[in-house]
Amino acid sequence: MTLYFGVDVGGTSIKTALVTEKGEMVTKSSFATNPHRCPEDVCNELQGVLHQAVEKAACSMSDVVGVGVGLPGFLDLQKGEIIKLPNIGWERVPFIQIAESAFHLPVVMENDAKVAALAESWIGAGQHALALGCVTVGTGVGGGFVVHQRLYRGVNGMAGEVGHLTVDKGGLPCHCGRRGCLETVASATAMVRRAKELQASGQLSDEIAIDEAKTIFDLAEKGDNIAQQIIDEAADWLGFGLSIIAGTVNPDTILIGGGISKAGDVFLRPVTEAFRRYALHLVADACTVRAAKLTNDAGVIGASRLVSQRESLRR
Ligand SMILES: [Zn+2]
Image 1: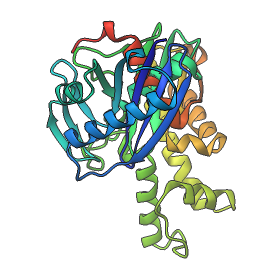
Image 2: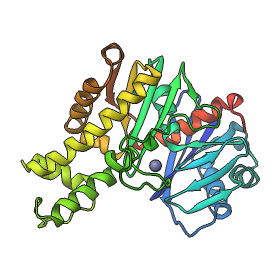
Image 3: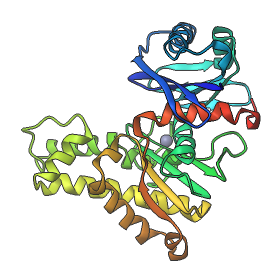
């Protein structure tokens, strides 16, 4: 039996699963992310979780061939280092070295949005895609390209960083240190910020506190035109961003995943309309935009897929 241990490190929780060669989850679990804990501590806890999972699945540690980890931020894959995880605070961490000494197994890592793209291409909504673009919209905007089932990483692993495409020159500041990135206008965070601005100026009722994008979608569903306008503006920016991606990569499929995809067609429809408006027709006509399928499990499944393809990784 061959099993992979997939780990998805997120800003609020760390998810894990033992996954088979077919992408089926044998066990899964999660625990809360504590930003004050060091990577050594977290890897040691994960090692304990792996042993419990092996016991629960009634298999043996020798069945587990490696550990794949999805991480939310910038990574140096050549050195096996975390450059920066903005939501967790880890910076310049020799992660592969720390994790391999905790697990006593080969460990591979990748940016979380790229891991999600890989999962969708393996057993999700992008299974039959030849050239797949996957865009994750939540707190930020992430992305990944999978061509013929393999992640396209570019020269230093930064291919697919669509959230930091400059779409609004001189626009709002972004945590990457620049301005006007796609995620400053098209993420859930951007929508909440815009809603608060409109509440402050009196254009949107401040009877309800808006701390998450879901509240904006709820208001729009009840017929609030300003809330609908916030959604449409973010969707327009995202569709514009997709047109740039598609014009460069010429994919047959673009998937929208992440927290905001739970809104369904209310968001997907205006995104697709904007995409078709901005993209070259020959590009748009060859491309389907639809929702990602795996949502919460994409991280652990994609991280497992990384292990199964590990011979292709340069570390
Ligand atoms: Zn940025």
